[in-house]
Image 1 (cartoon, helix red, strand yellow):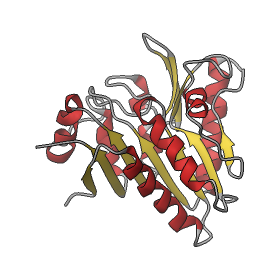
Image 2 (cartoon, rainbow, N blue to C red):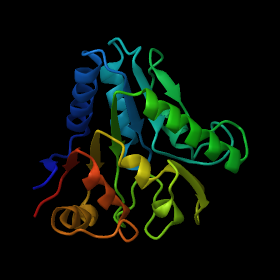
Image 3 (cartoon, rainbow, N blue to C red):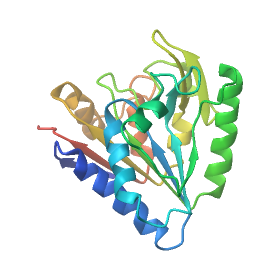
Image 4 (tube, rainbow, N blue to C red):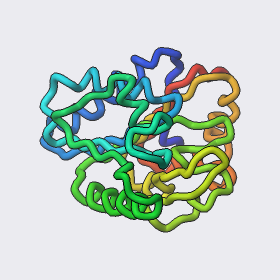
Length: 222
């Protein structure tokens, strides 16, 4: 029995509206919601969700990143900076960026501590993700140390950036995950999620199948 559905679309508004309604359903019952936003190809979806949410009561909403590229606060490759540039603006909510101006090790430790605290406080946890054609999710690359970490956050060097990311351990704690992934080069990953149980070391995105509710928005065609 599958715990996820695939919605065929190439309109990011469809994914944004879906996430918005999922968040509002929980907030409207008085629950504290923890919402994870991501970088990369899904930045525009996160920004659109913020636009849809902005006129609602968001005192019980906390927003965190799934992963970040380490550097000075506000550096141009920062996922948080790119979200803000796309218009992400929710002053009524509690926003918890990753970058603090500290060293990479201390920044990772602080992120881990913030995750522990926010997971404890939240009644409902929902994450927006993209998935790479190599099957990576958040900052968890295939074969990386982050995939086997027992912490909620992990930092490590990659070719392009020092990545700080939530780990599969953290992803498993979510109540709901929503994925935005477009392009035929990513279709094999969706097919794998549907048909195969691969190791998360080989294909980190497989961890999403441990989340109780998973919805994928894609232009996927069988």
